[in-house]
Amino acid sequence: MTVNRIVSFLPSATELLYEFGVEDKIYGVTHECRFPEEAISKPQVISAVIDSDKLSSNEINTQTCQLLNEGKDIFMLNEKNLKDANPDLIISQETCEVCAAYTNQVNKALQIIDRKPIIHSIDPHNISEILDTVIKLGKILEEEDKAKEISESLEKRIQKIKNTEHTNIPKILAIEWIEPFFTAGHWVPEMIEIAGGRNTISKTGEHSRRMDFEEISNSDADIIILMP
Image (cartoon, rainbow, N blue to C red):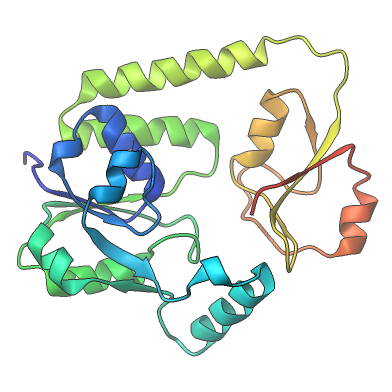
């Protein structure tokens, strides 16, 4: 099946689609798809229930937990834009329930649109799986050569960083959320190790998790990276 109309429920997928050069086939994106800049002009088919731009990290966490505990959605679909998009491919993710549109939104989308599209769900937990995601998407798009080119280019950049000599190996703590504190999991610990650091607390492939100040203090990190 040749894909002609794509809806992306994931900012990183949108960026990758542009890298593939198939931006003319993108008919719907999320409120967070801001890179490349051209993606901002695409119709938004999904947005957040919470206006996070006006809230602190603690307020965002509190409201998100409340919605989830009540069985409510934290993302909402724009039914008109989704119907107009009429996608034959929807790209979603299963890595994080609160980071981007999740299974609930995909199921609701299927009830809104007239056709039955391909559902491609991305779920990487380390760098190797991220690169594999590129190859898999390339097959769906019938862009295998371009997928290989992108993947090999990324691998070369990673290898160049790995080959860099370091006289000092600092202990690094990456914090994904400030209030409450959350570790940065999945592929982030691996990125830190590749860049010449020694990651603390979290491990490659593990989900991000909550931690307290005592655990942060005991990590005795030389460098703390804040990445909310």
